[in-house]
Length: 272
Ligand SMILES: [Fe+2]
Ligand SMILES: [Fe+2]
Image (cartoon, rainbow, N blue to C red; front, side):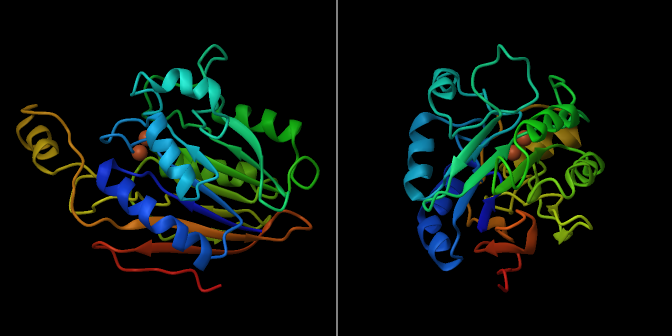
């Protein structure tokens, strides 16, 4: 199975680029299943039902989020109604929505998607993501309950994301980091057969501070002054993601490759 994962979509520019490119990417990369992190799709903060509809229409099978999941108030009821939109997994049970889901490819193969959130420098502090993932994997093991399993580890610390990779090694197809909005160069297959990357990178304008117009972040870092609000940068977008090919017999990864297309970053295209 070929699974395409796109990192955090930032603002209108990121959204437009992903919606325009995804049908072509899906076909060119022969992706059987597509996951998009959409936590910054609505003006940099959260996501709405209308944006989800556009992403689903463009070819996303599942949309994950993160700490910005609930920034748009209207999404609370939508999270209850739409199983393809995931909020962070390791939150109290009374929080609306779900942090995991079992989905099907068009030809009926089952994909479990988990969306844990890290605890390091994350506010408000979620529950232990490792124990939450462990419970999900016990209930739906790879090769039994699911033909492929993807873990979107939404976290600030590279260490915590790597730890999640090793924690899941041999038990899931892919652990992909999100939230830090910068693609890392460590995509590889762990010893037990799980594909791993610390950060997929954002789908946004990299002439920015993690996707936001530079002026206000600089005000705050340099002058310690908030002079305005954060707004997403609107320049040319680099679409960043990761493609994984799994062995349908075991669900483990055989190949992993980075995707970077458009905008300012050096391009990358999976060679398989
Ligand atoms: Fe993000
Ligand atoms: Fe985030």
